[in-house]
Length: 112
Image 1: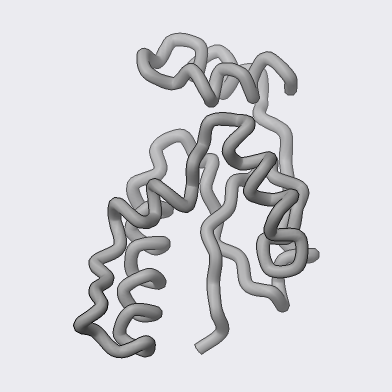
Image 2: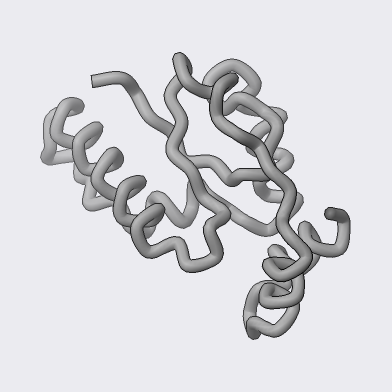
């Protein structure tokens, strides 16, 4: 199984080879993807590395499944360059502005 990572559609940095830049972008935009993933993933020191990897993969899939804003995507090192990085549409921007508790996302919208 190829290692997967959670990222956002607007983050231009490859989390596999540009992790520091990726993390700085992610936190500066208020996404906190690693923290979000940590809250969802059912990992434990009691589990094997393989079982923890499976739990993280399942959590990434769950986050994407319930991603009503459509901002998250799962990438692998092999497919990162081919994943489409897109800007938000004006309709998406308008809908984000109306959602309470999305201050970090609103900052991204303002810069789009």
